[in-house]
Image 1: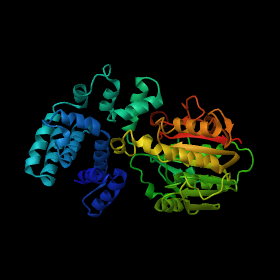
Image 2: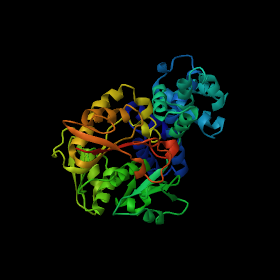
Image 3: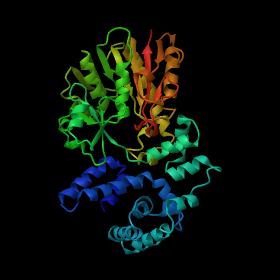
Image 4: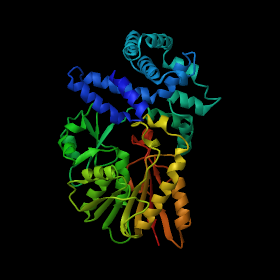
Length: 462
């Protein structure tokens, strides 16, 4: 029932599972009839069903006598939960079918329960591989559609990821498979307030590992609870993907010409990168200004930075209409709003909500924010353009377009408004493999175990 409630919230309210599910689990625990194994099963049912929705829709479609759009959404949610139990878990067939039929009887009525029973009995005739042979077109006939069905991604996203990744079939399949895996929970020890050793010391050896690439990262094992750690409760540490940490670290490590006293995070919400930058800035005697357009998100930034060992300021401000003077800052981070295609592991429902025309909506904002960043940094200072999307339209296309306007070319140049050059970001991420030809950096879930973060570092030269 709990998993069904979560899916209905995702469908009806466009909610995100990672926001809906925790309060439902807490409420169930408070009633006293829900233990850790129940919570783990509910979590797997919700996230597994959302990740595999495209594949399961294809299977269900082959087992019903009408288009899926004519199946009521609550019925389709019950069917999807049942199909995931049958094809994506080790739950015995009879238990999966009977539990789903009982759920349908309680929430939908006897008539629809019979329909659910009939469909799931058809589904149970084959395992997942058997169904994929039946519902996925052959790879040789339509590679993108084959991958879309087998790995449960919309076709346009498969195409976009493949273009960004390059290479042959093996690489894109590894990426799509990684998108369907449960991501690790990664902690960050906020500089000047905690250390990775402190976090590791607060956990059993089997409960956590040091980060792969960031010296501030700690990876929790399955079932690890961040809220049980004192440093997390006190705000000295937090939950932050290691790719996000690497973006902040690379900007902080970039070589400068001249002073290093004023830093800006121009799109700071909800505050993870800002908290890292504030701590790193304090170690050098620098000050961070963290700006966020939405007041409630600016409040989250202020909470994340509270207790920072050095001075900082948080303001609610639109990065495309900045209240600060041009040329003020030595380092500027612009982690721009985007489609979020780099975090599909964490928000699997996003892949079914995004549309190709969303890119057109983000494009002017992304270019405007990068232009603001270049105007805000002084000559000799460095801008970090970052986004949690590997889509070329949100990464290299934005950087290329703005640098052509601002600096003549992506190799550096000048116009009346100034000049700029791309820096090679790869040496600033020591030990991180498979960073490509540069000078920008694209991280990948299947290669680095991180979200697919993108970073370009740009120095203003005149």
